[in-house]
Length: 270
Ligand code: CUA
Image (cartoon, rainbow, N blue to C red; front, side, top):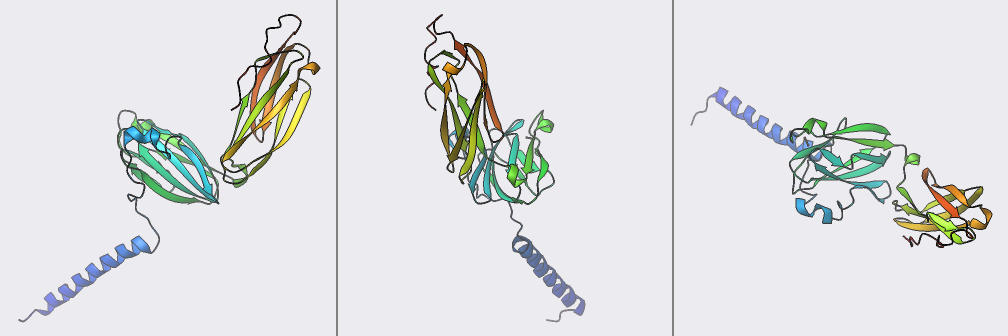
């Protein structure tokens, strides 16, 4: 069979093109490390989101070293949490799912841009080197207020980031002369130990305690309040731990007058 020279040239050229396309796609998939959204995140029933350990308390979790996981629930027309804070120099894996319809989770100015499909978990990992502020947008039309569906991602300097929480239990009222305590619970969401100081200020009294909270746990500091030092009246108190502050008011009643103030609020321990 005689093949015309031009036909041979076109045949070879089209073969070269096909090989070229395959090489380009292969390079794109492997070479620069561009990862496509895949099914790694797994399936999830939208009715069971609250029971899933990733999504029962959505937000930022430290998983060790400079690695963090962020669980986000999308629903018409908001993200939960709507504001996310992670440290710079971190590797962050996002897990996003939807409670209702298809949304997207797009971090403006980064290559985080994924569809969020009910029943599925979108997973993607990003490196954040520098502090910065990013908007989060829904790029998938999801109803009347689609255009208002937004969030915020703050990448803060490493030394400004922590996962500390402070909660305080204090009685509202105590009879003068009786003993009471103000209990401050410090939770440490990081996997590393937290060494800090808890301070109670009430009246003229200042009480400072060093506290060490191991990774992923919490400690309660008990501050005894010396009511003998305080005249009956209203006392504002402040508990501070690092940059966190809780305030309240303790009223000290005259023991001789009423007498039914009780020894403390009886809130019990956390
Ligand atoms: Cu959600 Cu558009």
